[in-house]
Image (cartoon, rainbow, N blue to C red; front, top):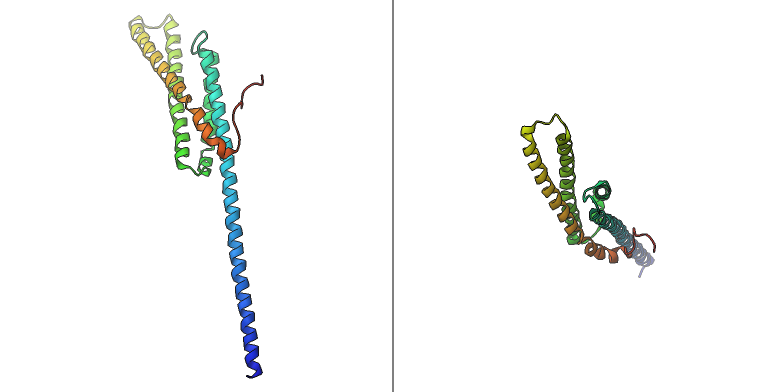
Length: 202
């Protein structure tokens, strides 16, 4: 066998070594990218679970305080309404960060969280609207210039609005009872317990 044949075999071996090295490098790069993507996805899911767990827990505690004040004196007095507006601001925080919801991989859980917020927010808006209208009509009724012929209609309107406000409040509080179960679903993803969050230390 001639010497150039051995050179060809040697070159072929070197080519295979380069080719195999390129394949291994590419595979290693892909594996590293996939691994990085996997851990990044898990990290974002954990952060999302922590965020929504905190928002929902805070919302729950605010609504509990609102219900406590509701049971004392004027049900829809200034303190109760302030607490309900605080709950609304917590919902606004959720709305501003709603895209983060898609970092949670469980589509059913995402739907439950979003539906829960909607079922609290919609009647809460109704409470504010009815309450504002009641205050306006009551102020008008106190005016000596209010037409006597319209007084009965205005009083009937106030009575209907009071029922609407009560119904909206009741539905809000009924839905709020479901917050804790959703928070419990988020805890394994968040790797964190939300018990005691927002509570004053004993």
